[in-house]
Structures are given as C-alpha cells and as structure tokens.
Image 1 (cartoon, rainbow, N blue to C red):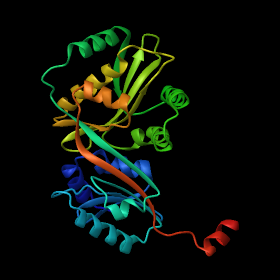
Image 2: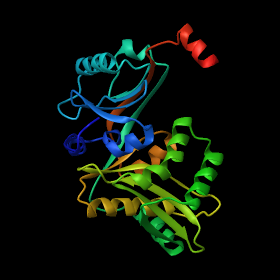
Image 3: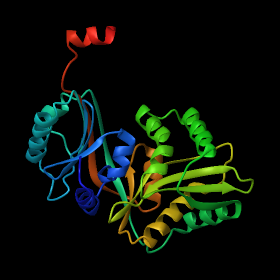
Image 4: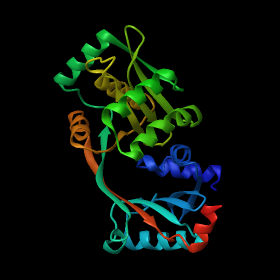
Length: 280
C-alpha cells in the first residue's frame, strides 16, 4: 500500500491517466504501490505496472530493473505492463500486445475552429450540459446501447461497466452529461481532475437513439473550460484507439505526446496442482 503522502507525490508528478491512483485502484480493484518511482497496482497474483517513471526520463534498463524487483517482491502469475517502449525480448513473450500514442491538448486554447464552434452552437440549441458526481440508469442505458452498436474490445467494455462505481467513489472524478430537450441522455464524458497538471478524459459515448448533433463537441468544450477553471496545464485525451477517435482528437488540436506499448504477460504457467484446485 501507499501512504497519503505517496499518493500526493504520485498525483503531483503524474503525466498519464494511469498515474491517477483513484482511477487505477477503482478500475482494477487492486492495492497501489510505489516501486523505484514507478506506480503499480496489485490484486492477488496480478500486477499492473505503469512503466512511465514519475521522475527522470524513461530508460529500458530502469524498466527491466523495476520488472525484476516486482517479480521478486510480489511473485505475480500475471503482469499487465504499459510503457513507452518494450524490449524486443519482453515483446516476444507477450500474450497480448498493443501499440498506440497518448494525445494531449494544451489549455487554455487560443481559439476554437469555426467549424467546431458551429457544432457547439448547434448542440447548445438542442441540449444542456451538466457536471455531476454520479451515474444513473440513463448512463447504464446509453452504455448498453453503445456496446451493442460499437462492439468495443473487452477491455473497453469492462472500463465502461466500471464507470458508475468509479465516478461514485473516486475523488476528482466527474461525469459531464448532455441532456436533450426531452431530458434524454444524448452523450456523456467521464473526466478526472485528481492529477496536479492535467485533466484526464477517461471514456465517453453518444447516443444514436437520442442523437444531438455536436453533442460530443459540446462536452469536449465543457471539459476544456472546466480544465481551465481548475488550473490545469493540459487535457489528457488518452489513446488514439482508432482512426475515427484520432480524427476527433486531432480536430480539437490534440497532438500525439507519448508513445504507448502494452503487454500482457503470464509469468507462471498453471501447474498440475492448479488443475486439481480448479476441479474441486
């Protein structure tokens, strides 16, 4: 576990969403730890290691040392690792692998493009935006609609399903809602304000059933305005994910800031004793 001072230290030095302690512990259900200025979470025999050092520049040799210490200290069966770069030897062992870039947007923005401004104004005619600290039945219904429509990856689906608990229990989390004129939820964004320097876009979606043109831009504008109010230096827009999402983030001025590589490792293969254990 970490102390209150250690959590404060992590949030003061955070520069990616996975450094946000409340987010990671809520989503993973694990306990937070610090290892050589690297943040990680542990849940039983599973470790999530955030391979972005809280101080000094990233170096492969430092990451290797932290992985070795993590193995010695916790003896995990499973290791989920994210880092700017993986070693070729480590990459070859990954059960699952992903490569992407983190996008960020500096605030305050000097100006908003006229096309985006028109979309925001159009949405303002047909919807209202609110800031809230809890999610309800409308969010559940919209999440289910989105999952049926988009069929997102299992990791994304699970993240959506964990949002109500996270928003309701994690200090710094806020849900931005866009309600149409009939009080239907047209779109929502989940944002975290816990890190010192940035606000983090966590996840969001819009409705086709209660579609409001420009609703996502309206929420993005609200997120930017809120970030300025809270004294943030930038908005962390998360990963590129796919061409459509990258296009939206770039449209708003988001730029790829850091590289991202993810690796899922199985460090201990099941033994014959495990087979007997599961057979009970």
